[in-house]
Image (cartoon, rainbow over all chains, first blue to last red; front, side, top):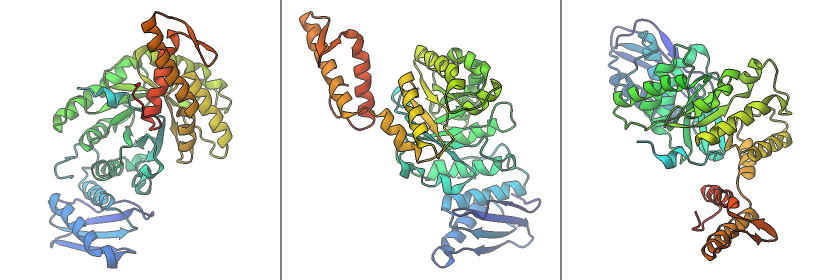
Length: 100
Length: 302
């Protein structure tokens, strides 16, 4: 997917994550803030990058402010932000396809 | 194919949870409700409907709710959201879709068709997702019987007291007077159609005595359970709706005695000093079924 503009999904509440994505030109750049970065930093990175790959996002700048989100929440926030950035979040989501 | 045992399962407590809040949907099974109701409708802000669906999908797919039934309340069919809501519910594999603001049988038919199409789209078995209808208006309550009969998938109807009392041009008084007619109409309709009936929420969390009294009243009216807004309300509802040991023993005696006396050609007799005849049979069976479903009866009479 080609990002059209910056967009975010999520909140700064406990158990959530605020994910912001913006269009970029040279690949993926990812920044993560988390109170559990030492323990789960790699896992968060893995989940985010896997989601981007599944959605075929090749160029993007991503910021994740994690507040102790489960993997399922993190996935939902990355997807929410990406689909919003592509103006495609409201209908026709490929549930079980790219969103999995 | 509709799974009848799934359709008729025990639903004493149905806890509302906001799909917009990950902290609420991550582990509500710890409170052991019979059902949770993941809300995409009123609890989710208009500009977060899209994000809530992504959260819902992954929660349905990845969180093990440990046997707690997963109901999803979709947005009304007068909104731009309901069709995508149905797609995510079916793809995610929820158990039941709750249709809000249901006014007539056709509202159920519209949702049912979309569910059927989504089942085909996502390769799910036909009938995999059940339906329930929330009656929130005078028209919905008047049409309760046709709604109760509207679909094989329909598990039952639920009263939504807030919107209903607005339509009635009154308000929630916590005396029950304003809801009496709707409750009576709905439970009669539900029983006549052979589906379940659920009462509205009780929102005053500081009045646990009032809550218990209301729960006892709706149980006596015949309701199957109640919608809840706080986990603290769950044990109260379960206590009211679960047969006591004494009730179970009496029910066992009645079922056994009627079975034996019938074989002997005796129609009416006494159990513990009370006159008993065949009219008590179904009630006693129901008590035992409820007790079995609640895990407090292990006998073999039901």
